[in-house]
Image (cartoon, rainbow, N blue to C red; front, side, top):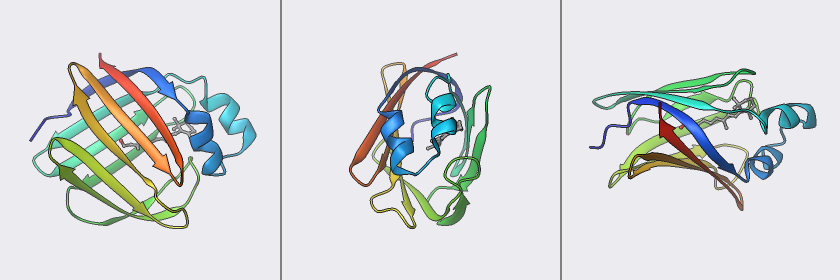
Length: 133
Ligand code: RET
């Protein structure tokens, strides 16, 4: 499979505001978060993944095994408990996050030298693009 490992710096962040809104993230947090440059640090080792989302305001980190459902607590985001599962779909990493919100998850893929992340929840899609640091 494709290796997503590396440090990736945010270039674009489309519709992040609506994504935060649909997650009921409070106004003050949204006002700060919308202006943040996010960095993804991905460590991929066989079927193990660690994904760190870093910013000057707050960080968020998950570690998981591909193909194994785990309990995700979205601490510092919307603070919900989810049943999360990440799988390969071709060269795309596809995540489903089961919980209170319908149709919640994300996809990671690489196109050229860019890392793409699509975050979705209900009918909202946020699209982020990162370049290698
Ligand atoms: C920040 C800053 C504090 C407020 C919010 C944030 C959102 C983080 C998100 C992270 C998603 C991570 C994923 C990792 C897998 O690739 C930037 C921590 C709301 C939405 C999907």
